[in-house]
Length: 173
Image (cartoon, helix red, strand yellow):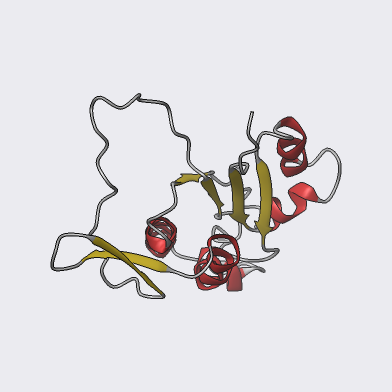
């Protein structure tokens, strides 16, 4: 067998994500143990962050993990050209495979799990109101994160999933 790079599971979120690695029974630590030698779990949890601040930090996280932003566009001959640092034109599709080729299940190299929402749900007039993000803005932030992740580098197989925040106790919030 040949040694292949391991797929990466990248968790982006707030303190619930960050602290998931802080002790042996944390949920992120358990993922790392469970998938040991099958995939690398990368924790990019940011204590106190909401989706607005996470969206602002996302380009730094993506550059660290995926490298510089790369767009793919077609030239005059219909060939795809990658351009570093330019995300303005990402219209090229991946090369088509022949129907006679052996079809094998391909898994993404990078799976991002977005875990924001607990801080966003703080009450707008509560003790933690600076973390509050209105629902429409929260939805927009998540969509922008998904689009940014998917378009950052079209040459890599990337999947994105959302993890819902835990229930909110309005009496405590």
